[in-house]
Image (cartoon, rainbow, N blue to C red; front, top):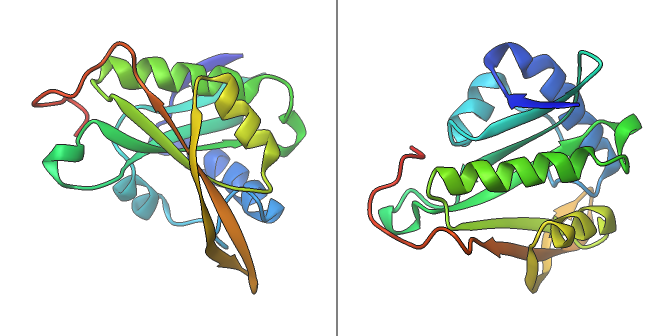
Length: 169
């Protein structure tokens, strides 16, 4: 398995995995995948990573800003999705480990994830990669008429400290 940057030409493979996550009803509150343009606009330009196994995208991860305010420039929210047939095989851990390292190289000091509470696999993955639970937001989102709690997890970098200008935007 290789970890590589996502490029625009990867969108169909990334989108397919995103749709598989949507179908689980525990990976996201989204009910449809956005266009490449909308996805591209809503995520930081880097890091955007894909896991490639046997020439096929096995999973992906990317960061979104939590705010456009300068004070939050080193804080990002992550998304991570793994192909349905490859879950539980280490793809997620490889991707999340690479994302953490790449984000620190860019000066990001806090990564956060909001995880639907019934997504136990994602919560365990984040814990295994150094994230801690900071709280539960009760009945935060409704999906098809069912309210869900969201576990807020974060990882503070021991290497990067909040400072002035960053290279992520």
